[in-house]
Length: 623
Image (cartoon, rainbow, N blue to C red):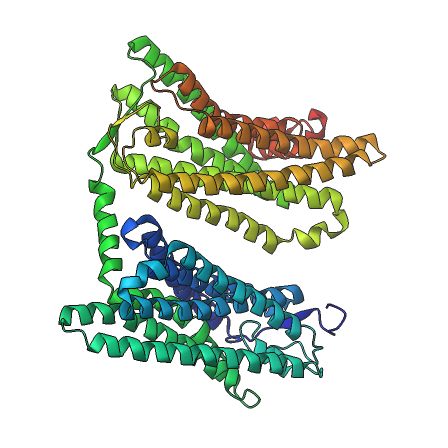
């Protein structure tokens, strides 16, 4: 594929050459993107977490929200990144990826809209057989067929598009759009792409006719209803779907069927925004605006978050009721917290102020230190304060904050550890391409992905946990730990939490397997190095990271997968201390113990900030 084209990259359309306007475009697209993500995530969360919405219509609506979220995530982030970086470039593989995923989500979206029309037809025109026809198996098959159709269409369309040769690398659009790629093609294979495009239009037109006929039947049935309330309810579920379908169809038709040879760049851009950005942003608004069932569960969720539990606060398990032991606990916790604080702050400070350490490995290490400091700051200070004030209470909102931030820092920590393994893999197994692969932009994107992954999982996990009804307010732990909260739950909704836990565990296992595979390749490469000094250098950078991963995974797995005891024990407290306090204290020591670069940079920093009288001895003599 790469040999058939004369270009390795494409140049996307800029919104403006003026830097101020580029920044404005970035913030406008950021607002669009955040609104789209928020709206669609709310739809997905409402349908997933509320049992009243576990019906075929809302199941398909949830799938539609996923396709909307996916389609807007394919195009907007790259455009925002280009505006910030003041560039127009997208790689050949990046362009292929954009076309493929955009077509996948767009085709799946269209198919789902057709399926939703059929669902409304059966519900209104044949209500007595609705549950038999639209059963769980049939719904899953229909949704699966929609995604498979999108997958097949994306593969065929992307393959035929990039089988062409291109006379230019200038794409007259802010993302890789198929009509614009056909426009710069100089291959006769564009005929194949046009034939596939016409076939797609024919299939889409057939679906359109099916939907129109369906809605004619639906409206004729609705208008025959004697009850005005019944008509209003039927219209409230059908009109949003018809509006969304019309918006999607006419937006796409304007772009793919209009002549583009003489269209101006700004016209192309406006049409692209209308059909690729506006529908995913407006669909959640349209579906929820006239839909009482969506609005009521959202209101219900907000109210039940604070009212469904019979407790306004929780009682944390103290270490001891004896005054002397409480003082001992305070001293131990204060010492561990100060050590973790000083160590991680030193790591961050040394990396920031030492230009020799401005490399990907130490950039990720600084992020890791910040996460370690954050995770220990979530739990230890509250426990110290409770011991000082001789209390065991934590407010309901305080417990939510503890769970949210602890999960956030730990998930981000785990993802960063995986990124660091990949960094070491590239550095050792592919050193000639290291600077190209691990460039500044790639490192920032990887670190940001780790933090965003932590936010996403923390939101999902915390939301699922605090939908419970709690039969007790006594937590057998010195902080709000999720296994202990599950233990005092008396709600059937714990199944949602179990599914979130299974999802997290599956992701963690796959991610951990990739880390292990990376280290197998790394150690094989190291053992082939002829120089013992070279082996020692590489082991000194890899072994600390491997030890940190093992410490984190083993301790976390032991806590979350062991059976919880029915009564508090000293063992439970020690295990929790081990996984939430020991890693933040030990990680800086493990990374600095065998790392000469970090130690040299530390002593240089100490020398630079020390009084002049202490600088008389040459720095090099200290080593």
